[in-house]
Amino acid sequence: MGDLLWAMMIFWIIAFLYPNLNIKKLALYSLGICFIVEFSQLIQINWLIKIRNNPFGRLILGQGFLWSDLIAYSIGITFACIIKYYLNKILKSSNY
Image (tube, rainbow, N blue to C red; front, side, top):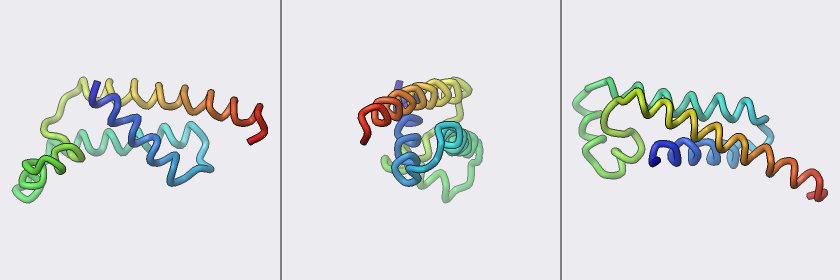
């Protein structure tokens, strides 16, 4: 559940920073970031391990690679896309 929420957070951060991006690009960029971070956990360099041993670094970069995390990221991004789609629809219909 945490990985799903983390992926949604990445999606909303990108949506906030780049409000004119369409949903497909938001999904691709956020999923790309999530996957890069996950695959970076396979890299075992001393300075990177030290960052991951810090609680804040562990939250950002994770601790260990899991294939199931990639699935959780995909589900989280999908949920965020659905929410964004309906929010856009509501905002357009109410003339905001």
